[in-house]
Length: 362
Image (cartoon, rainbow, N blue to C red; front, side, top):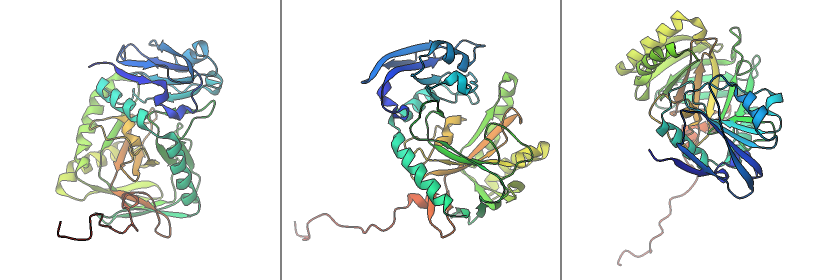
């Protein structure tokens, strides 16, 4: 396919354009991307990340201190640079190693990022955290199936995360941006004893699954098999019975969901660490569209009013990490205000008005 042509000004999550913009790719990416300098940029620096070289090592050694850095390395796992390695640079990374992204997928997500409004994401995040902070108890509802789960975020320890908005100096963020989440502990460090203790009730899974793996290529075949076994969830629903942040039961809501429920139950039985709902996520990127495949960047998908998603496991502590998008679900405050989700997408309070002439004889 022809190279994707972009300019540095397409990506406003880096803030006001200034200085060097550095694009880091790998050999697999090749010449599939064409990036030219936009207004305010002094130059575009393009670097290739060689196998065996850490991203942070390359940045510290070869990238100017004040640069904005975009890393797009399909099929390659990238460790986050340390604060010392990153310095004052701004970094955005397309997650392209844990799930199999094709060139077409990469281009789709880059186009999404080019249309993403980082300032709007910052505003949505502020509104989200204001509403959540003012409500001790949140409810996740699925209006189609009638399931409800309560989340008391004041019960036990939890960590709120924001991968959205404009980057400051020394910040790093996923690309495309647009995800908020709460985890049982620091998001990158799996603690088998940590729990979202205030999460209990029934949760509906119905939407695209995502299956991440770690570095071992031998896991690729089982990753594909597991993803395919869970794909009935795209159109069929299962119910998770949750207590103190841990899954106690999996029940198919329809006969078509039974194979996915069986696969999930087997996973939870074989490795009980998957019973822990490690992450309760909220996609807020309403520009992106679902790529109908096993694609990690789908996690930022926000439909039109935001999307709830669940995360089970975390690599490399568990062999796979699973995310489930739940676009039918809504997150509500204790007084019923829709913070995010399907109910948020329903516009209320506007009267229908006829704009044609008031006479029916023309």
